[in-house]
Image (cartoon, rainbow, N blue to C red; front, side, top):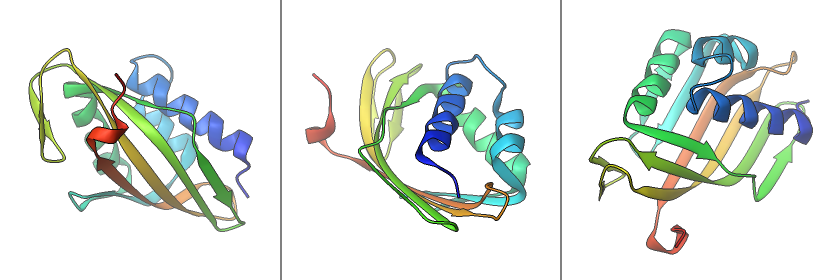
Length: 141
């Protein structure tokens, strides 16, 4: 079972990758995911199967914005499943549209993320489904 402390380390490792320091997305995947893991991002219904697709997705996001997952608001785990809810802040590196909203380079926005993880017996992720919701109420002034 992945403990809450271990999950915090997972988020710290991911945030370090997004900030351009730490182990890099490929090594991050190797540390936390099964080789055949699936990462699904909703609302775009983007499904990334395996390391190459997941790393390409994360690097694609990283090319246009810097992502920082904030401390989770909710966390629940069993031996086979983990769920969390957390705000995610994005700093736009260029003008872009994300989840149906236009953002300008240099601006930030926040999404609320609900993430559900299938966990293998060796405490690695096999399937991750991330729901991201934009709402003006979530924005930091």
